[in-house]
Image (cartoon, rainbow, N blue to C red; front, side, top):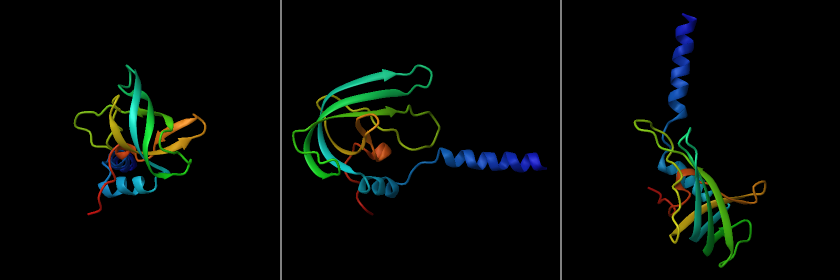
Length: 136
């Protein structure tokens, strides 16, 4: 009997680990982001992990517009962004992956400065490189 209860608890917990995030929660992450910028992507390098299917991304970008910046960025500054793009799996629910930036594209960016890596990192998960989500 105890084994069945433990199995049921494990299954319920596992389901919540891969649940989708509501748009309202992504909006809250965007609003709480230390940096809200408009960027022009200058270069992108990718490193693919064969075993996990994930891709490490490093992008260099120029700041076109500053809406909010805790690190005092200004228009014309150049920054480095690093993150991991997680491969989406068929038939799995879960948070949306952070998209892979494209060279020469312009995008909104919700970022935070990571002093340990000396670069910027996405701060709104899968909504880090899209316009502010409207409130409904």
